[in-house]
Image (cartoon, rainbow, N blue to C red; front, side, top):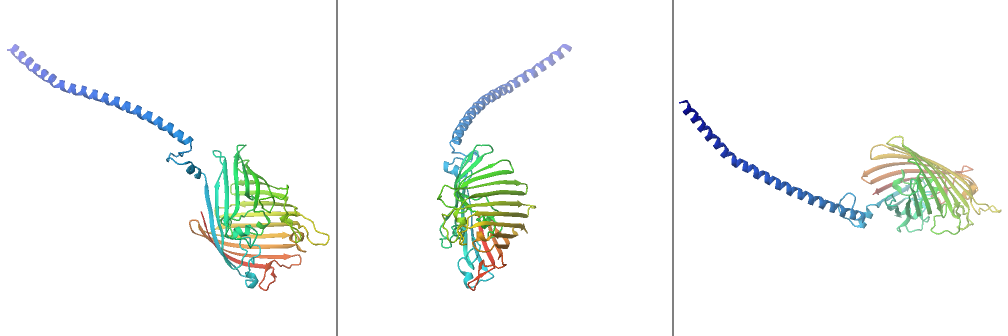
Length: 444
């Protein structure tokens, strides 16, 4: 009986084991097939990766060739022409400005003629609407990567007419304010050489209206040259100190031709700190236009010099200040008859100005000036003193669009406490003038 039971158990176990083994054979086959397929896919992925790596190396080589040829930008933004690459390095800016001025004192008859506003470089015509300036600047700065550069500025309007020093000039014709070629020499921290017609580095104010606090330029500005034709070299000695040196045709008379071998020489040391700046410079040379008396011509040369000091400060984000001192000296000579043949002597001028931002879009500015000129330099028999006081309110109306209103008072006195510097309504001369101006300009 016992052997029968053992035999039965053995038979059942054999059946179960045979059944399990038979069921496991298909599973093992499926696993084998999956492993084979995975191996094939891995081989294919490896081959695809190798192809992609080869393609990437080819693309990198081609991109390097295009970059070296200047046909693709560094930002990988796509292909571009050489012209497009060049214009990425060029800045274009400018300003369009128009205004109206009205003489609040002596505004009748003779006070209304052309040139009635004495001492106003850009606003000579009293009680007049005018186009102040349409100004265009194109500039390509020389850099370590691109050492060549150029710069030119054209202006039309009353600024161009005044810069031509003639009320008869056509203010519709564009006038070349400055234009030069630049080279950044790899010497020290870099020496920039500019050759052509250059804006003077001297002074706190400029012709371009949107660069100033005020609509009008001041009396001290009139003691300084505006542009020169010649060559200059500029270098940054340290992060705070720069030096400018130049050789030009004349001190004041900016002509494209020089009538003699004499030249004018200028230099300036510029210091810029945190919220503070100091420029000390000067120019000296022969300039017949600076010494001409009533009996001399443009070719009568004399030695002329100008010492210029400009101090700037920004005590707060809303307050900007500057002060400008100038000393002009000429060494012409008088004739024995007492008629001024070549003007000579000294003129001193100092101006202080500041602008306070009232809001983010509005500010108020003020300027006070004093200029003293010796009799032998002004062409009269007396020394005279000129005082100007200017107040300006500016308001930004939209991005780039600014309107300004200004009130300016000028008065002149001589040694006898008399003044005769400004046109009067009776056909004579007055010792003072009061002018209001309104200006609208757009800068881009």
